[in-house]
Image 1 (cartoon, rainbow, N blue to C red):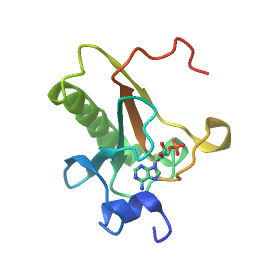
Image 2: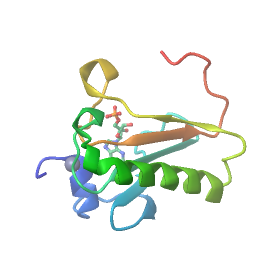
Image 3: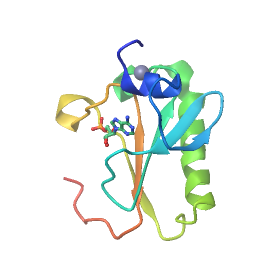
Length: 114
Ligand code: AMP
Ligand code: ZN
C-alpha cells in the first residue's frame, strides 16, 4: 500500500531497526518505545487490522506468534515475561493501519489493561 508507513518499512523506503526478518514477517524496534523493550512484529503483506485477517491468513498469524516466541527467547526476556498487544480501530487506538503486534517488556508492566 502506497501510503502505509509499515509497507514503506517493508519496502526499505523508510529505515527501521530490524530485529527479525523472513519472507513473510518483519520485526523492528518501535520508534517511540513505551518500555525498555518495545518491538513491533508485522506481516509483510498489508493487512489493515485484526478485522481484515482472512481465514487463509491463519498460518501467517500463527507464524507471527512463533516469531514473537523466538524473539523473546533469543533476546533473553522470555522467562521474565512481556506483553503482546494489537490495537484495532478507533476504540483500540490504532494509529498505523497495518496489522502489528507490540511486544512490550523489560520492566514490570501495570496491572491494568486499560
Ligand atoms: P498503534 O497505535 O498500535 O497503531 O501503534 C503504532 C506504533 O508504531 C506506535 O507505537 C509508533 O511509535 C510506531 N511507529 C510509527 N512509525 C514508526 C516507524 N517509522 N518506525 C518504528 N515504529 C513506528
Ligand atoms: Zn501496509
